[in-house]
Length: 225
Image (cartoon, rainbow, N blue to C red):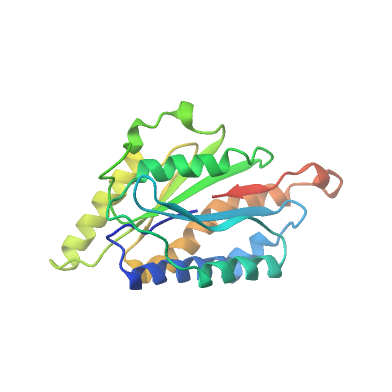
């Protein structure tokens, strides 16, 4: 899970983003799926990104098997101090960083990279130039675009969100069934993240429900970066 902390994200918006992730992970419907099958846990890794060399790990790979595991993740998110933020937005570099985190998780039967952002790339490699040959096998990249307050009013805000969503759809997301979720603003981030997680976890829930008890030892964890 990659969180945008570039110069366009002020301190209040940054906290809304962190608290939004915490709220979404602890939402009852999300917890139901997270704890559905502790023998085949979901692994979570969270990092923040801005410029080409500015990626900071907030939560290292953690298997969420129990409420205590989720509390540990929530505590790391709540206690994190914002790292160095570049004024630029390097989505391509954030994608490559996510690939590097997911690449070793070869025992996960589903690997997903979640990227949140409120702007288009303006430095570093363009997302559209990162070919599928650089994407670890089976990794899906989904996006969560965040609308910003507009001095031109709500109409322009919706136009900006539509444009950013189209940009992510065309250039950022990739892989089977990849999608873009939309938060109208940072105040809507928690609800948007919850919708996004439930959509991503839906197939996992179905797969886990279909696994017989005699086969459970052969099920691998799921990686969500």
